[in-house]
Image 1 (spheres, chains in turn brown, blue):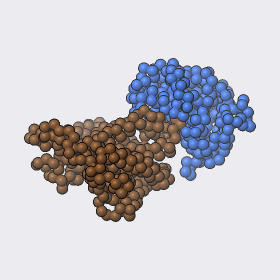
Image 2 (cartoon, rainbow over the protein chains, first blue to last red; image 1 turned 60 degrees about the vertical axis):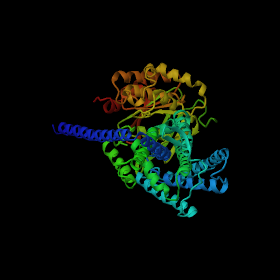
Image 3 (spheres, rainbow over the protein chains, first blue to last red; image 1 turned 90 degrees about the vertical axis):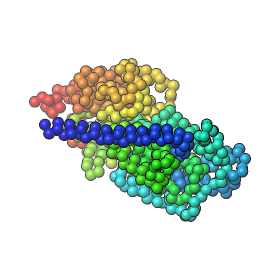
Length: 346
Length: 246
């Protein structure tokens, strides 16, 4: 009798929570439609800014979600690895290749590719080394030990950035023009935004291909779903974890360059961006690759709408809104947008 | 591969005086057993007797603190799990442990992860589908959404995809409807008839002793009894304890 009543209570309260969640979501969608109708051009221009930022957040969020999927570890150092990669990219672009605002397009493209050719392997190695040195010895320790170590690694990497680059912001010249590449009416997409998508989209396609079809990628999914069973099938778990950190480090390096093309970067940029990206990963359903990109796009959009449209709280409130969304997701849909309810409740 | 002291016609698997600890708990207190080529050997005993721990010592997940495990005459104690699979021992684990968000086909593929001969891959998949026609119907389905019996078929099929020289089966009948249990045991006999030695861990002692050549009875980390399956089946102690008689 008591259990039946308790079950009924649980069903009632969960459907009430679902209803409130849907109501909030519906109100937000209605508000978006209203804003679109008010000034479609502005809405779309702001949306493009949001998509660009979202793409950058997505690259970083994928690093969190890949590692979490395999180790159930929040790798706090990831954001700082991203920031350091951006700083190193700025050195390469300014001091080594010497790209200027008026450099020829072909040289710019070659310079950016050469930057990636150096930073991607470098930060893939650094990230895999962090795992090998800091996390692997704690594989059998309580999860909290690895988590605290990740916070420690975050400070170490951040301080390396501080020691190498100081407290100043680094930036690169506008060698990718801010002129419009695509113009439909008053809606315009500038070249520097197009460039970001030209880098991000192929990277996402390669990542999807790798995880879905290659032997190593399938091994990664198997380890993520059941590590011990994967070992019993002959999958080398240690190697698979290393490959995951290599992938995450490569994504961080690409994100570092892409961020640098858009914004200024300094030693602590990775802290806040890391938090936003982690929020995006949770929002999309941590461990789910598509979810991480989707969550990042949503956060990018929310941020852009809040800062670019009228009648919103404005940029001072962006952080509060982003983390308010995180809390709302954890209350209304703990598994995230695309996450699945698993027996472990993860 | 060099033939060890036991020679080519010796046992496929030889375990001698293996001790395994979980922290301070002495889980295996000197286990010795053998699986000969072409045999089905069953390991029976109550819950917590150490049956699964014995399998985990063989597949490399738990490293024995003492003792030796030899496979085809070669010492494999302390070898990492993935290398043991590559060497020819594959397993269908307790509770099936399929990859729930992968399709049946992908699960079977994972079973063949360590194999380099991709050309025989399709052929082996066909062989698994012949053993379990049900899996062929469900091959695109996510493994986690199938019934317990279908999942067990998939788990055994997955272990077979490694082309094992020794097959470890951990509680293949657990939680299954009687009709599925019978199918699973028929398949075990069929796989063995095709030439694969089997080490079968079971709580369903009666069924296990029916299909096995020899058996070992485990009690609290030790081998309490061993002998031909037919003899164990009529042994009074076995009947009283595991077959629900007496």
